[in-house]
Length: 69
Image (cartoon, rainbow, N blue to C red):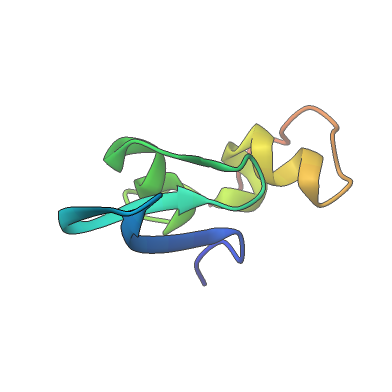
């Protein structure tokens, strides 16, 4: 499951992009494609564990627990 705070936008403030860009609604800013990999739980990342922005927005601003395999 992807992060509920992740959106993809094709434009911003009247500026159209060539392609959709990842936008974090929790932080109110565009994020890098590498950050979006965490948001999308790619490459063994889990946004609930690996993203401090998600944890703060979700009210779980504790240190990230160690992921279990």
